[in-house]
Amino acid sequence: MSVSERGSKTRLAKELGVSRASLYYQHRLPEKDEALRRQIEGVMSEHPGYGSPRVAIALGINKKRAARAMKKFGLKPARRACTPSKPLDIGLEALEYPNILKVLSPITPNTVWASDFTFIAYGGEFIYLCTVIDAFTGEVLGFNISRKHDAKFVKLAVERALERSKGVAPLWFHSDQGSEYASKTIREWLQTLGTQISMSPKGSPWCNGAQESFFGRFKVEFGEFDRFDTYADLLEALYCQLYYFSNVRIKTKLRMSPVEFREKWEERQLSTAIHSYPQVMSLPPDPPHAPAERGLTITN
Image 1 (cartoon, rainbow, N blue to C red):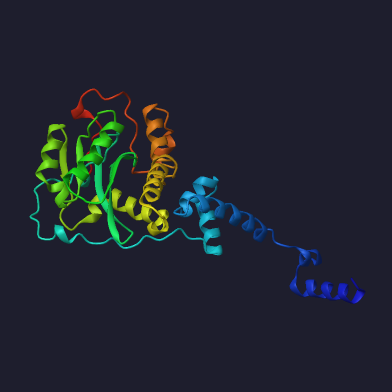
Image 2 (cartoon, rainbow, N blue to C red):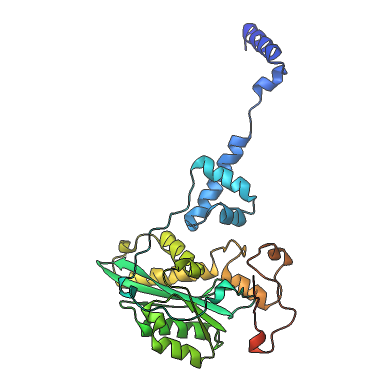
């Protein structure tokens, strides 16, 4: 550096009221952000539906830091698409069943199972995916994929959930008032299991929020269905994605996957730190003894 250049920097520092050395300082935040960007992109390449809360959990960093970096670099999770309507359900008479999720918060597995099905467009036709989710853990206990939707279609998904729960039926089974769930076949069969029926009011999909949210994120993260050459390839990918959602994908309110949460709950090793999340209630001190006492908390 020439004497004139050195003198210029000295005069500039004096005019700014700072030390001359500070003019040579290079902020390290851009370098750190670039490294963080690569880490976030690595997480999102495996989990395209992760927003900043899940990214933060996966990387073990503050969620505000993750959100700032994702906003800076334009990193966004995939967006959900619109849900098609069910024209065959229009005009059906409403059934008089309570919406138990409006007043009850489950605190154990198998207290409330929620179920619904969604449309999948493939090869110029629709196929259907029905799932049964435990409202406490968020785990997909059972599912069924078929080219048609009727009472048998729903019943097989529930039967698979019963296999997963080792024959333990839920106290409550929640669904919408679609013709499949409103069928006499399903309602009478559930009652033989000792399960009480809960239904959302007609035209109120938000009352089955766990299922609506699940299908929305599931479809977005799965991607285009028509990218598969054969129906068998599509089925295999759907099976893998269902496994991923229960066993691998972090559920934000649990800070872990649903299966991991259930296993920790069953082992009574769940950290009390999780209690800061209002959706998750405290662990029962002892295993429940009577079905009527199992996992019921009435909320205002």
